[in-house]
Amino acid sequence: MVSVGDAAFREKANPSSLALGGHLALTLGLIAVAGLLVARFVLAATTELAEDEAYYWLWSKHLAAGYYDHPAMIAWWIRAGTEIFGDTAFGVRFVGLLSTVAGSYLLWRASLALFADRAAALLAVVWMNATILSAAAGIVATPDTPLAFFTTCVLFALAKLIETGRGAWWLGIGAALGLAFMSKYTAVLMLPGLFLWMVGTREGRRWFLRPEPYLGALVAFTAIAPVVWWNYTHDWASFAKQAAHGVKDKPANAFASVGELLGGQAGLATPLIFLFCLWGSFYALAIGLRRGDARWLLLGGIAAPMWAFFIIHAASQKIQPNWPGLVYPFAILAAVHGGIAVLDRRRAPVLRAAFIAAPFVGVAFTLVALLQLGTGAIPVEAKKDPTARLKGWTTLGAEIDRLRREHGAGLVLTDRYAITGELAFYGMGADGVAQINDRIRYANFPPPDETRLKDAPALLVLKAGSQAKASLPFGSVVQIATLTRPGGLRPRDAYAVFLLSGYRGGLFACDPATKRGETCSQM
Image (cartoon, rainbow, N blue to C red; front, side):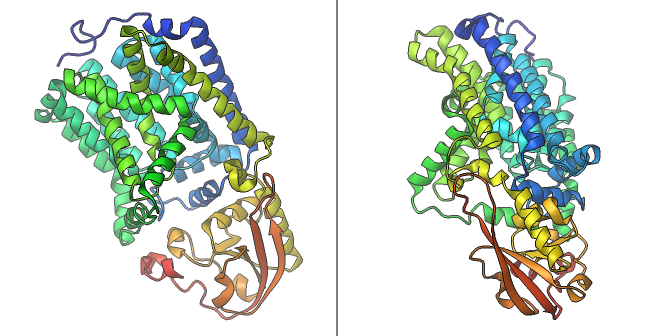
């Protein structure tokens, strides 16, 4: 195999990337990244948990090989952090924070392995950390955070394979792919691009005749065996749930849905960085196929098909803004190195100015988002402010816990997983709250203690407008309060609190561990 270290394959390192922005611009970018990193750590410690984070924290109290919504990696990460820092927001987010630092290092090393340009590698790190997406991954603990890290591990291992030609890197590729899948099922979207890279270059094709890729596949299958086994023992509930989730929300207008996807990416990646990432992915694919260049085809061959998948899929299904997150480690390198390659050859002042401005625009957008998260200084209505979802839970939890104590209630009941997790974290504890429906979500948990319903009244907390109280097995259901969760300008989330008494039994009769979700998911 011809490696990147050979003169015939490696482009001569040159200061072109520095010439595009200058030493001062790159230095300022790195200082900004350091400042953003400090801000992430501060906000991770001081910002309340988002709804999904609190739900995943509940998972971490009952570790398992898989869960109804996602694989288990985020629960393991949260458990590791809370073992060190306790049940605090910082503990929940700690491992994710570290992963963003480690991921930046691996992105830098991958860039160096492919193109041997230190300035360009540092610029790629600046671009990645300038995005709101990267800031969110470092602050909010969701499956997208470990997915982003292990996706970067895949990129790094593939880059080292190309650089060194050593087949042992296939074991690292397999491990990283498996762990990415154990983070979120969308990791499978990297496989078509990996296959395209193998068939599209001479260096890739030779691996079909070597044992190392197949050993790497064995490592990957070993890594994902726990979640496959969990699904097998739970009637494939998680796989089925995610498959249905990907086709359940039909858009009213295909063009509007695609526009919404692209607009969401422009918001999360910031506008200029997103446009360069989208262009760079297809540029790298074209260069890689035309030249048979393993480096460019690695970046474009994995990134471009994923972009195409999400764009086409958006025409028939609403795509959540975070779903394409795993494309960015590949797309960022394609954007930075593609931009440098084009601007080195052409006089394009507008494009050059946009390329230089991209990370600074990104930093500005991200700083505004972090400022809003930390201070709420911008007067935006709560329903239009994404940061409002991380605010007001401490106050709401304290108010409901006060009502629980005043009325001597045993359990607090809810009908939404988001409320369940938040009230458990901010007041009632992991065993003090139980969701009355969707019991398959709690298949790994011990069943709720129904004696606490028989021996004392209970509280039921519903988001305003919910009809879940209609068929509950209680003799008396009386509304005792309506509470509003503060956060943002004119907060809209109101919650009705009911006092329940005269429990007749049977609320948690469905055991998802044995029923496998048929009835539990409909309760």
